[in-house]
Amino acid sequence: MDIVYTIWLRSMKRYIRSKSRIVGSIAMPLFLLVFLGFGLNSVVSTTTLGQQYVLFLVPGMVAMSVLFTSVFSGIQIIWDKQFGFLKETLVAPVSRLEIMFGQTVGGASTAVFQGILLMVFAVFLGLRVTSPLHFLIALGFMILVGIAFTAFGIAIASRMEDMTGFSLISNFVVFPLFGLSGALFPINSIPAWLKPLTLIDPLTYGVEGIRYGLTGTSPINPVISAVVIAGFAVAMTIVGAWLFRKVTV
Image 1 (cartoon, rainbow, N blue to C red):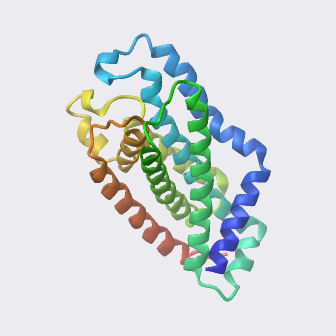
Image 2: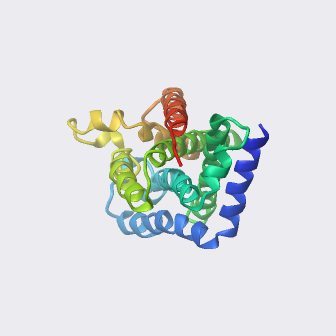
């Protein structure tokens, strides 16, 4: 476990020292939350949502912050390849599985921290978490989303050699996942032909789990959301570990 802790600590130190990364990761979700939320607040029907649109957006923007930070933490693998750090790590007397777990936990931790920062800003926009238990539920779903998509990012990065290709492929996958997740619209009011695509999107269950924790309501049972996103996290961790074991430097 020492190697897992060491790699986690390295990821956290790099994150804390990179102020531009912190600001850049939270800027877009916060921008969408403020301008899209207040811009459409008087247009979107509160009867359908049961709350103001800006508050409906909060769980989706929190999930967005965790999602993008998680996936793009995988680029650290490519960075380490190019600068030789990964080679030095792989020749050390530790298993590749421990190295991958360390990278996953480190990326997920930074992603969850980003999500918590956004929640703090959302409090000033009117977010009120009903109880400490509901906050812990939201935090649990954020952790599951962070682990799942950090492992997803590592899986992609393990097969890539340059950062440009990683960014293109990640965006090609991540934006549809986010767009179909119900982060920007209620899934119980979408067209019938679109609903199956939304329900097979694993991020949908992460968004709705976070929504249940922050607002106390969700069209999907939180137990079902927890089972699906946890299963996806386990599956992606296994796939990421398998692909990382095949990395050559």
